Length: 83
Image 1 (tube, rainbow, N blue to C red):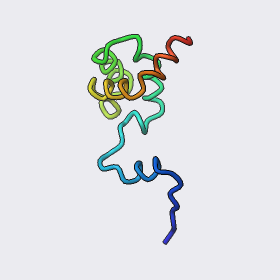
Image 2 (cartoon, rainbow, N blue to C red):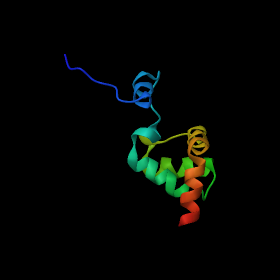
Image 3 (cartoon, rainbow, N blue to C red):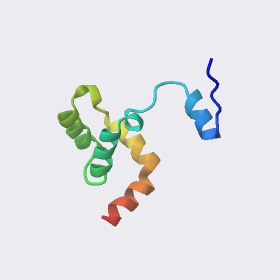
């Protein structure tokens, strides 16, 4: 049996959080696409763009996009104004 040492509270929470992680947390290409477009369009239009580009297996709903925006809004706005 391998022993795994948890080095931070954040890691412990990630390992013990119920449910599945968001697709945006696990799919780097999808997350990059979302971050590139999220400040320029609506959540519904962005969800349609994602469905078109990545297909139904990797698509996300407007609700997921809104949650992601709410969680990362400050960083995303700073990145958008820096460009």
